[in-house]
Amino acid sequence: MEKAGKTISTPRVILRAEHSISRSNISDSAVKVLYRLKDAGYKAYLVGGGVRDMLLGREPKDFDVATDAHPEEVQEQFRSCHLIGRRFRLAHVRVGRDIVEVATFRANVPAVEEGEARSVKRGEDLHTENGRIMRDNVYGTLEEDAWRRDFTINALYYNIADFSVVDYTGGLEDLKAGWIRLIGDPVQRYREDPVRMLRAVRFAAKLGFRIHPDTEDPLFDLGYLLEDIPSARLYEEVLKLFMGGCALETFELLRHYRLFEHLFPQTEDDLAQEREGFPSELVARALANTDARVAAGKPVTPAFLFAALLWGPMRRMAEPLQAGGESEIQAIQEAGDTVVMRQVQRIALPKRFSMPMREIWTMQPRFTQINGKRPLSLLTHPRFRAAYDFLLLRGESGEDVLDLCEWWTKFQEVNADAHGRASAAGGRMPGAADERQTLLRTPVAGAKAVMGSEAPAAAKKRRRPRKRRKPAGAAATGTAAE
Image (cartoon, rainbow, N blue to C red):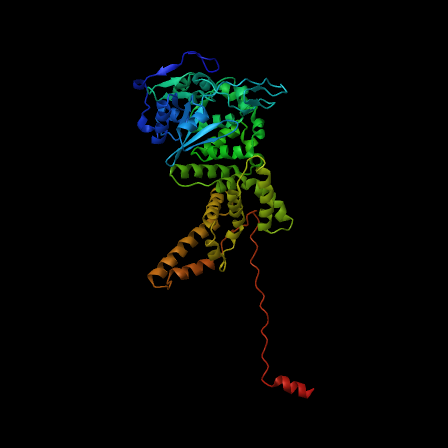
């Protein structure tokens, strides 16, 4: 069989008895869509990550359908179908609570030669001057669809008609060898859609595969193309990169191929100036913690992830502001505004995540305020848990806040114990309440402000001198004496 990039007229067909894919592993919703299209006289195939993962013995997450039916024809078959997209027209079919994505076979798109300063059109297709595809709605055959997909391991088709697997591009061989290989000329394919560089890294980290040398070499030089991708699209890609369970390995690969600097330029600049393992240690630990939470089935939030990724740049920018006389919280707020403003020019960050991220930052100085009623007040803050976890992350990463971490951990335990005893004692808090008060009066050795300077001592409230009451009648006596 010829390698990727050269069209093969006869595909390799693996019969049902020769592969491990079973309809029982495919979602019921996808099976219904496949059979409805087949029964209506159209070709219907499961394609992409679902087929790849089932062949690898993994649990599939995505079930995408490819067909020769045009989007409008798909819509005629399903009342619950909604057509989306302009660059790439798709049909979304709702089956119960699931949405099955159905794509019409696409044809190969004519390439734009490097340096050619004109757009190339074919039907609805349109390129930019650097070769990026703007619209891709030229419909074709199954073979053409296979050759226009990105990676060979994603160009495997499961035929619902006879349960066979169809391979035009050598994807089965690469799947067995563990290669991530682009279909076609890598430089041209990256120029058509630079996000393919991120997908190559993501699949390599997720599957534990190697990137084929032909696919790998351009990664070191074409990262700048990502700067032309809309920030909203890059945000979605970053979530896939860092919230899929392989964040740490993905991060290391992105830096290796010099792609990370085009996604988080401020963070990359800060990593280049690291001091005694910080801040790369914090970023690495944050990503490792994210992976652990994903593996445990726990929720993860972009707010915490971005807080860790941008903490270093914000911290470095806030230090001179505080040295210039601003309070610690003011310095964090001002530096945070600047860092976020610069970052969203590359990767969009919705306010529902950027606001909690800033709260996590601005709450860090409040952890140094461990006297009086302030700790109890901080416990009730809706972002307390996230901010406390971030404090622990800072401590684990080498920042001088370990004493504060221990104090706040103990304080939460004592406070929970106090409430528990209060419930048992009908409102009274014997023992634990006294322990909590003792803890509140205990100074924390080495408690530092966020920027590394000593935490300012709490200002003492000035008491007004008490006015002495004059004896009754004194005012009248004094007046008369005058």
